[in-house]
Each structure stands twice: as structure tokens, then as C-alpha cells.
Image (cartoon, rainbow, N blue to C red; front, side, top):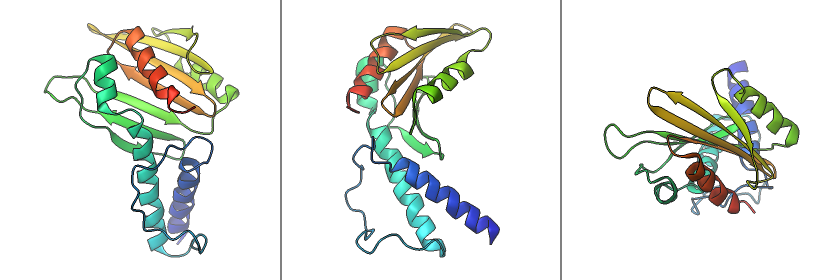
Length: 190
């Protein structure tokens, strides 16, 4: 029983975080069957937990829809499959697998309910030995990038905050291209 309550609490927290009014994009699915006129279901049965998880998946997919593979192709020149959305209570993860064998995978992360202090903490986490970290200007409210190399592949990762959303894009592409992708996604949040 405690496990069910913990799962329900975690799912509810994820749902509330993902459906915050301040920066949630329109849901990708318009055929929702949830009746909101009667108010929320009491957190007792298993069915509401499953409905909450479906709504959360839908919200995660809506976030990933802000970065369609066509936008990635036009800015990074990479042919990728449509994103696979996943989420935790703190983040929405969008994973783009390559269309062809041997291609590179990229990751996009949205952190919600963020502010300057949490952004500074994210930057401090990025400051590890062997990884170049520097501020970026004219990208969102504040931004930085990291650059790391593994073999002959250089991965540039741009992290930017726009309002209460922190967006991170990491790709084996030139910094200018990754920065342009981040700018184009942030423009949709305004």
C-alpha cells in the first residue's frame, strides 16, 4: 500500500510539474477523454494513476514537439528519427536516434520551474575537469555552453534559461549550429 501511495504521489507531482501553467506548450493530443468539470479524482484507485501517467506522457511529447526532427535537420544538418519523450519529476527528456546506422544520437532536456539560482546550480554541475564551459550572450535570459571531446567527436552542449524553463541541447555539431537550434526553440516559449 505504501508503494502504491508513493507511486501515486510521484506521478501526481510529475503531472503537476509537467502541466504548470507558465510555460507548457499546447498538448500534442486533442482527443483527451479526461473530464475536468468534476474536479480531480481522489488519489485512491489505480486507474487515476494510469490516466495521470498518460497525461504526463502527452505533456512530455508536447515539449518534444517543440523540437521536431525537421528543425534539427534544418539547423544541425542531422537526419534523425522523431523524438522519443520520457520524463521525471524534474525534467522532460527528448531522445533523437539517427535515421541511418552509424549516425549520432542527440538529447534535448527541458527543466521546468527553474529560476536564476537553479540555473547557476546546473552550470556548476557542468564544470568538470576536461570540459570547457563558457557563458553565451544573446541566448534566452542566460546561457552557457560546454564542449567535450571523445576521440574525434566534439560534442557541444548549450544550456539556456528562458523564464522558468531551462533547455539543454547536446549534439556533435558546431557550437553556432547548436546555439541556433536553442534560439529557435526558445522563441516558441515566448
